[in-house]
Image 1: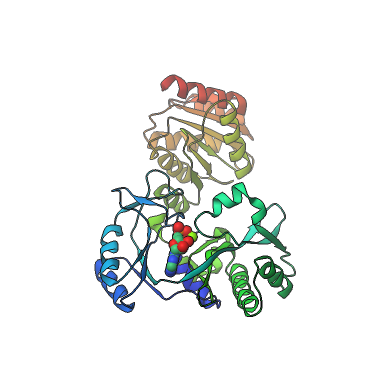
Image 2: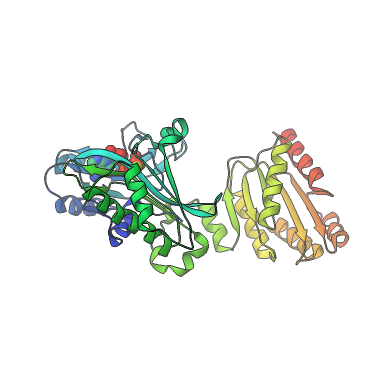
Length: 396
Ligand code: ADP
Ligand code: MG
């Protein structure tokens, strides 16, 4: 689960990380109030969307920049008028962009230098990784790609936690000295503590700036939480912004389905995350392109299968469906009955291939064959994948 910059900054502040003063607003009245809290000099107006690259983004009507540094309150008001309810396209939003429904007004900083600092779960080493760079700011992706040696990586063992020597190592690598080493250590300690206590997977500050006055401050923040641990943190759950999530994924979570939309055209309905991944791979290896990841779980019932079909079909790109179910805990005849009932319940207008395997598979296949539902049963995963890719190609 992701949160907005302004929410992330509030959390960071609770953990002792300095951030500029700021106020969020979602409508014109709140915009006025927010601006009135700030002085009548340089103000930064920031579009709040769950995507980065805002500074270099462009609104669909041509208005440039999702992060605007303006000279006074009037200009802040003008920028807000352009940005609120407008759609911002950045390198991370895709061409359709994101509607900006919240703005953040914050004090402008005199920046001497922009750094990058993040604490992230590193799956490869199964450790926490502190990543830092002297080349922070809006081009960090290019730095990571072209000059990866400019990223400092310091692993932190989860059993031992962050120690002062980690902080010093990163601080020295960034070139800090004296008082700034202390400031930096306080910031990294706060970042790590927040990462750990809130079950985050990423806490990123980009840029972390040194002001002309020598103070270190977080000017932007991004936090991702582990969704599987979110039940332990009602205070974080409250920060969820459904406007920023795919409606299909929201619907799926209501039915305990693990669904992730992708941009292909062959929808998959599978039980088990591993089998779902294998199904996506095999579709791809036969030249098709998966429209989603969908794990209906080990004990999926008819209601869930129906909901899954509805969610799949609400994606206009879907030109075919591959159902791949292994009857392990559930029996294939029970699953087949569920699929047939769901298929009758939902108007399926695209080719449907169903592959069942496992307990009572013959009984299951008989039910599918005799159902009268327009579907193609398949015996193996390879055959199923070939069939659906073929049928979609022919139909298109
Ligand atoms: P994004 O990463 O989505 O582009 P940022 O919040 O990082 O958005 O802002 C982009 C750039 O705008 C920053 O790298 C920084 O140079 C500048 N900026 C952001 N906030 C402030 C601020 N409060 N004062 C001065 N400059 C800022
Ligand atoms: Mg940024």
